[in-house]
Amino acid sequence: MIPREPSELKSEIGRVHCENWNGSRRLLYAPCTEEFAYVQLTSLKGDDVANRVPVEHDFWRELFPHLGWIIDRIPDDGRGDWFELIRTRNWSKGQVSLVGDAASAQPPFLCQGGGCAMMSGFVLAEAIDRAGDIELGLVEWKRRQRRFTEWVQRVAYWYGQLALLPPAARIAAFRAIGRSETLTAATLLVAARRDPTAPAARRRLDDSAIPIPIFH
View 1 (spheres, rainbow, N blue to C red):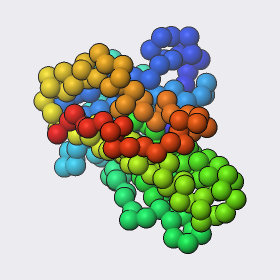
View 2 (view 1 turned 30 degrees about the vertical axis):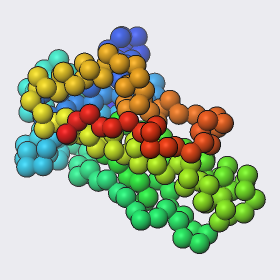
View 3 (view 1 turned 90 degrees about the horizontal axis):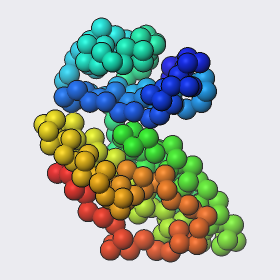
């Protein structure tokens, strides 16, 4: 998290989510509140300079010279983590369940992991309340939520694989997604646009409703 300057609240670039690539290195800027913005730097394993903590400000500024106003505010006490994709054999046993990253951690490329965790918790509470029984509610929760969450995990994983593509191929992939509202809704915005309170969200998610990843 970095502090936001008052001037950013009025400028177009300071008010919007922006993602920037230079080769396999990526800088994400996402405003969260009027006071803070979330910044994410990603790079491949083995990219020693890019992976260094504290962040090598000069190195990243050279990669993204137009984003020095972001890079200069990244603190020295930032943290670096390897991304994980967690799949469990079961989300629950008896009357005990796993929710959020414990059951379904995903790479952060879509910025939807926290939202998925809160959505899953909400659906769990609603399912148990509707069923009037914990174990029956857990069965309904997993039926409604698990396959959807695993689809979001899959999209997040394949999005990360874009770092392995040549820049021209990656740009072509972004343009293909951007030209299709249906594809965008089924991939990048699939979790953000889901209303877990809607009746449609209580229907079973069939195989035919799950798009196939387009990146390999």
